[in-house]
Length: 65
Image (tube, rainbow, N blue to C red; front, side, top):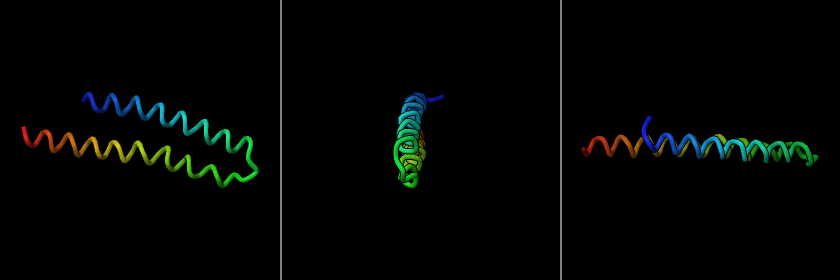
């Protein structure tokens, strides 16, 4: 596993846990459960986007070497 993947994994775990806490708080305290979709989508979308960016960066770096 590449070093950037280890950092991405650490970031993703923290990011998903915080997003899950936000969703649980919204569902537990708000009468509008529809507001919980935004943290779910952001909680899954941001790590996927960052992994894609890291993967592209690693491919370009490997191609130059």
